[in-house]
Length: 93
Image 1: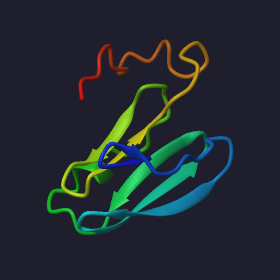
Image 2: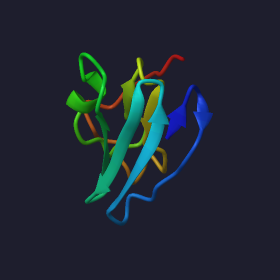
Image 3: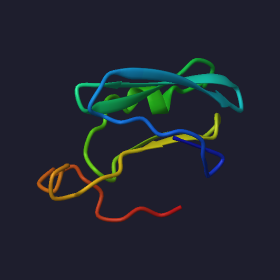
Image 4: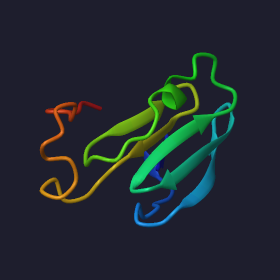
């Protein structure tokens, strides 16, 4: 998890966990379950990060820009999403 482009926490995807990160608009909850992660904003107007839903493939992201929080899945592309037709082919920051 990143807050304003600074790594603030990591969570393994092989076990269920939850964590709150201090976002610009208030707390943002990050959950892991079943090899996936999701971001749950509490005060963002459009809730785009929350509507992204569960992500689990390497390179996938869920972002709340107003809160300044980004969740990114990292790992071996050969074992996490190499055949995912929805996977990103490029990421710009």
